[in-house]
Image (cartoon, rainbow, N blue to C red):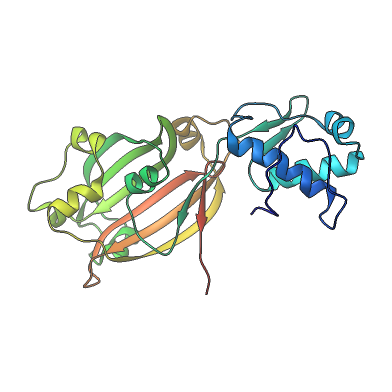
Length: 254
Protein backbone atom coordinates (compact mmCIF):
# COMPACT_ATOMS: atom_id res chain seq x y z
CA UNK A 1 0.00 0.00 0.00
CA UNK A 2 1.53 3.33 -1.06
CA UNK A 3 1.14 5.99 1.60
CA UNK A 4 1.30 8.84 -0.89
CA UNK A 5 2.72 9.58 -4.31
CA UNK A 6 5.45 11.96 -5.37
CA UNK A 7 8.30 11.78 -7.85
CA UNK A 8 11.30 11.81 -5.56
CA UNK A 9 13.96 9.26 -4.79
CA UNK A 10 16.79 8.54 -2.38
CA UNK A 11 18.84 11.25 -4.12
CA UNK A 12 16.41 13.95 -2.93
CA UNK A 13 17.56 14.77 0.61
CA UNK A 14 15.01 17.51 1.35
CA UNK A 15 11.94 16.31 3.24
CA UNK A 16 8.55 18.02 3.32
CA UNK A 17 7.75 19.68 6.64
CA UNK A 18 4.01 19.17 6.04
CA UNK A 19 1.63 16.72 7.71
CA UNK A 20 3.16 13.56 6.20
CA UNK A 21 5.46 11.87 8.76
CA UNK A 22 9.15 11.97 7.92
CA UNK A 23 9.52 8.20 8.18
CA UNK A 24 6.79 7.66 5.56
CA UNK A 25 8.43 10.13 3.16
CA UNK A 26 11.74 8.28 3.49
CA UNK A 27 10.04 4.91 3.08
CA UNK A 28 8.29 6.04 -0.09
CA UNK A 29 11.51 7.38 -1.61
CA UNK A 30 13.21 4.07 -0.99
CA UNK A 31 10.16 2.24 -2.33
CA UNK A 32 10.25 4.39 -5.50
CA UNK A 33 13.88 3.41 -6.06
CA UNK A 34 13.02 -0.27 -5.52
CA UNK A 35 10.11 -0.04 -7.97
CA UNK A 36 12.27 1.73 -10.56
CA UNK A 37 15.01 -0.90 -10.31
CA UNK A 38 17.64 1.38 -8.80
CA UNK A 39 17.71 -1.02 -5.89
CA UNK A 40 17.36 -4.55 -7.24
CA UNK A 41 16.59 -7.84 -5.46
CA UNK A 42 19.67 -8.78 -3.45
CA UNK A 43 20.89 -5.18 -3.12
CA UNK A 44 21.46 -3.65 0.31
CA UNK A 45 19.54 -0.48 1.13
CA UNK A 46 21.19 2.42 2.96
CA UNK A 47 21.36 1.62 6.68
CA UNK A 48 19.92 3.58 9.58
CA UNK A 49 23.12 5.60 10.11
CA UNK A 50 23.36 6.54 6.44
CA UNK A 51 19.67 7.51 6.35
CA UNK A 52 20.11 9.63 9.48
CA UNK A 53 23.03 11.53 7.96
CA UNK A 54 21.43 11.85 4.52
CA UNK A 55 18.10 13.24 5.71
CA UNK A 56 19.10 14.72 9.06
CA UNK A 57 16.63 12.60 11.02
CA UNK A 58 16.73 10.56 14.22
CA UNK A 59 17.41 6.85 14.45
CA UNK A 60 13.79 6.17 15.41
CA UNK A 61 12.65 7.82 12.15
CA UNK A 62 14.99 5.81 9.92
CA UNK A 63 14.12 2.62 11.78
CA UNK A 64 10.39 3.27 11.30
CA UNK A 65 10.94 3.74 7.55
CA UNK A 66 12.81 0.44 7.22
CA UNK A 67 10.33 -1.36 9.49
CA UNK A 68 7.52 -0.26 7.18
CA UNK A 69 9.33 -1.51 4.07
CA UNK A 70 9.90 -4.87 5.77
CA UNK A 71 6.23 -5.07 6.77
CA UNK A 72 5.31 -4.46 3.13
CA UNK A 73 7.50 -7.39 2.08
CA UNK A 74 9.96 -5.26 0.11
CA UNK A 75 13.06 -5.90 2.24
CA UNK A 76 14.44 -8.30 4.81
CA UNK A 77 16.48 -6.92 7.68
CA UNK A 78 19.32 -9.23 8.68
CA UNK A 79 21.78 -8.74 11.50
CA UNK A 80 25.21 -7.88 10.16
CA UNK A 81 23.96 -7.59 6.57
CA UNK A 82 21.56 -4.67 6.67
CA UNK A 83 18.30 -4.34 4.76
CA UNK A 84 18.21 -6.60 1.68
CA UNK A 85 15.77 -5.99 -1.19
CA UNK A 86 13.76 -9.16 -1.81
CA UNK A 87 12.06 -10.53 -4.89
CA UNK A 88 8.61 -8.95 -5.39
CA UNK A 89 5.72 -11.15 -4.32
CA UNK A 90 3.42 -12.65 -6.91
CA UNK A 91 -0.14 -11.72 -5.94
CA UNK A 92 -3.18 -13.76 -6.91
CA UNK A 93 -6.78 -12.60 -6.48
CA UNK A 94 -9.05 -15.08 -4.76
CA UNK A 95 -12.22 -14.06 -6.59
CA UNK A 96 -11.44 -16.02 -9.76
CA UNK A 97 -9.96 -19.34 -10.84
CA UNK A 98 -7.04 -19.28 -13.26
CA UNK A 99 -4.12 -21.51 -14.11
CA UNK A 100 -0.63 -20.96 -12.73
CA UNK A 101 0.65 -20.12 -16.22
CA UNK A 102 -2.05 -17.47 -16.68
CA UNK A 103 -1.18 -15.91 -13.32
CA UNK A 104 2.52 -15.76 -14.14
CA UNK A 105 2.18 -14.42 -17.68
CA UNK A 106 -0.23 -11.70 -16.52
CA UNK A 107 2.61 -10.43 -14.31
CA UNK A 108 5.28 -10.62 -16.98
CA UNK A 109 6.82 -13.82 -15.57
CA UNK A 110 7.65 -16.98 -17.49
CA UNK A 111 5.92 -20.05 -16.00
CA UNK A 112 7.60 -23.42 -15.88
CA UNK A 113 6.88 -26.91 -14.57
CA UNK A 114 8.81 -29.94 -13.41
CA UNK A 115 6.70 -33.07 -12.99
CA UNK A 116 7.97 -35.49 -10.35
CA UNK A 117 5.45 -38.21 -11.09
CA UNK A 118 2.07 -39.16 -12.51
CA UNK A 119 0.58 -42.32 -11.04
CA UNK A 120 -2.63 -44.08 -10.10
CA UNK A 121 -3.20 -44.32 -6.33
CA UNK A 122 -6.15 -45.30 -4.10
CA UNK A 123 -8.17 -42.29 -2.97
CA UNK A 124 -7.72 -41.33 0.67
CA UNK A 125 -10.69 -40.36 2.82
CA UNK A 126 -10.02 -36.65 2.18
CA UNK A 127 -9.50 -37.01 -1.58
CA UNK A 128 -12.58 -39.22 -1.93
CA UNK A 129 -14.75 -36.71 -0.08
CA UNK A 130 -13.55 -33.81 -2.25
CA UNK A 131 -13.97 -35.71 -5.54
CA UNK A 132 -17.28 -37.31 -4.54
CA UNK A 133 -16.10 -40.91 -4.80
CA UNK A 134 -15.44 -43.86 -2.51
CA UNK A 135 -12.24 -44.21 -0.48
CA UNK A 136 -9.88 -46.65 -2.15
CA UNK A 137 -11.14 -45.98 -5.67
CA UNK A 138 -8.34 -45.18 -8.14
CA UNK A 139 -7.35 -41.56 -8.73
CA UNK A 140 -4.66 -39.92 -10.84
CA UNK A 141 -2.01 -38.26 -8.66
CA UNK A 142 0.19 -35.59 -10.27
CA UNK A 143 3.13 -34.14 -8.34
CA UNK A 144 4.71 -31.01 -9.83
CA UNK A 145 6.96 -28.10 -8.98
CA UNK A 146 5.98 -24.72 -10.43
CA UNK A 147 8.51 -22.10 -11.49
CA UNK A 148 8.42 -18.36 -12.18
CA UNK A 149 11.33 -17.16 -14.33
CA UNK A 150 13.16 -20.44 -13.60
CA UNK A 151 12.86 -20.04 -9.82
CA UNK A 152 10.75 -22.52 -7.83
CA UNK A 153 7.64 -20.85 -6.43
CA UNK A 154 5.28 -23.67 -5.42
CA UNK A 155 4.72 -27.40 -5.25
CA UNK A 156 1.43 -29.03 -6.16
CA UNK A 157 -0.13 -32.45 -5.74
CA UNK A 158 -3.27 -32.83 -7.84
CA UNK A 159 -5.85 -35.61 -7.62
CA UNK A 160 -8.33 -36.31 -10.43
CA UNK A 161 -10.67 -39.12 -11.41
CA UNK A 162 -9.28 -41.16 -14.34
CA UNK A 163 -12.55 -40.48 -16.20
CA UNK A 164 -11.53 -36.82 -16.53
CA UNK A 165 -8.93 -37.98 -19.06
CA UNK A 166 -11.13 -40.37 -21.04
CA UNK A 167 -10.97 -38.21 -24.19
CA UNK A 168 -7.19 -37.81 -24.60
CA UNK A 169 -5.78 -40.17 -22.01
CA UNK A 170 -3.75 -39.43 -18.91
CA UNK A 171 -1.08 -36.84 -19.80
CA UNK A 172 2.59 -37.75 -19.83
CA UNK A 173 5.35 -36.15 -17.80
CA UNK A 174 6.64 -34.52 -20.99
CA UNK A 175 3.23 -32.97 -21.72
CA UNK A 176 2.86 -31.51 -18.24
CA UNK A 177 6.44 -30.23 -18.16
CA UNK A 178 5.69 -28.27 -21.33
CA UNK A 179 2.24 -26.82 -20.67
CA UNK A 180 -0.57 -26.03 -18.26
CA UNK A 181 -2.83 -28.82 -17.01
CA UNK A 182 -5.78 -26.43 -17.32
CA UNK A 183 -4.93 -25.87 -21.01
CA UNK A 184 -5.05 -29.64 -21.52
CA UNK A 185 -8.46 -29.82 -19.84
CA UNK A 186 -9.84 -26.97 -21.94
CA UNK A 187 -8.75 -28.72 -25.13
CA UNK A 188 -10.76 -31.73 -23.96
CA UNK A 189 -13.82 -29.54 -23.40
CA UNK A 190 -13.59 -29.51 -19.61
CA UNK A 191 -14.32 -26.06 -18.20
CA UNK A 192 -13.44 -25.17 -14.62
CA UNK A 193 -16.02 -22.64 -13.51
CA UNK A 194 -15.94 -22.47 -9.73
CA UNK A 195 -14.27 -23.93 -6.68
CA UNK A 196 -13.54 -23.82 -2.98
CA UNK A 197 -10.21 -22.82 -1.50
CA UNK A 198 -8.77 -22.95 2.00
CA UNK A 199 -5.42 -21.33 2.83
CA UNK A 200 -3.24 -21.75 5.90
CA UNK A 201 0.29 -20.84 6.87
CA UNK A 202 2.88 -23.36 8.03
CA UNK A 203 6.59 -24.06 8.15
CA UNK A 204 7.94 -25.99 5.18
CA UNK A 205 8.99 -29.55 5.88
CA UNK A 206 12.42 -30.74 4.79
CA UNK A 207 11.25 -32.09 1.42
CA UNK A 208 9.30 -28.95 0.49
CA UNK A 209 12.17 -26.68 1.56
CA UNK A 210 14.59 -28.68 -0.60
CA UNK A 211 12.30 -28.55 -3.65
CA UNK A 212 11.67 -24.81 -3.24
CA UNK A 213 15.41 -24.25 -2.64
CA UNK A 214 15.03 -22.43 0.67
CA UNK A 215 16.62 -22.92 4.05
CA UNK A 216 14.55 -23.96 7.03
CA UNK A 217 12.72 -22.48 8.80
CA UNK A 218 10.75 -21.17 5.82
CA UNK A 219 7.07 -20.19 5.78
CA UNK A 220 4.75 -21.61 3.12
CA UNK A 221 1.13 -20.88 2.28
CA UNK A 222 -0.74 -24.17 1.95
CA UNK A 223 -3.70 -23.96 -0.40
CA UNK A 224 -6.33 -26.73 -0.53
CA UNK A 225 -8.52 -26.25 -3.61
CA UNK A 226 -11.37 -28.21 -5.14
CA UNK A 227 -12.22 -27.01 -8.67
CA UNK A 228 -15.58 -27.73 -10.30
CA UNK A 229 -17.39 -27.65 -13.62
CA UNK A 230 -20.42 -25.38 -14.14
CA UNK A 231 -22.69 -28.26 -13.04
CA UNK A 232 -20.71 -28.47 -9.75
CA UNK A 233 -19.04 -31.79 -10.57
CA UNK A 234 -15.52 -31.82 -9.12
CA UNK A 235 -12.60 -31.78 -11.56
CA UNK A 236 -9.62 -31.77 -9.23
CA UNK A 237 -8.52 -31.63 -5.64
CA UNK A 238 -5.10 -30.01 -5.32
CA UNK A 239 -2.79 -29.18 -2.43
CA UNK A 240 -0.28 -26.42 -3.18
CA UNK A 241 2.62 -25.13 -1.08
CA UNK A 242 3.53 -21.56 -2.07
CA UNK A 243 6.72 -19.89 -0.86
CA UNK A 244 5.29 -17.15 1.37
CA UNK A 245 8.14 -14.71 0.81
CA UNK A 246 7.36 -14.66 -2.91
CA UNK A 247 3.60 -15.22 -3.08
CA UNK A 248 0.48 -13.63 -1.61
CA UNK A 249 -3.28 -13.80 -2.02
CA UNK A 250 -5.54 -10.80 -2.54
CA UNK A 251 -9.21 -10.58 -1.57
CA UNK A 252 -11.42 -7.73 -2.78
CA UNK A 253 -14.18 -6.90 -0.31
CA UNK A 254 -17.44 -5.13 -1.01
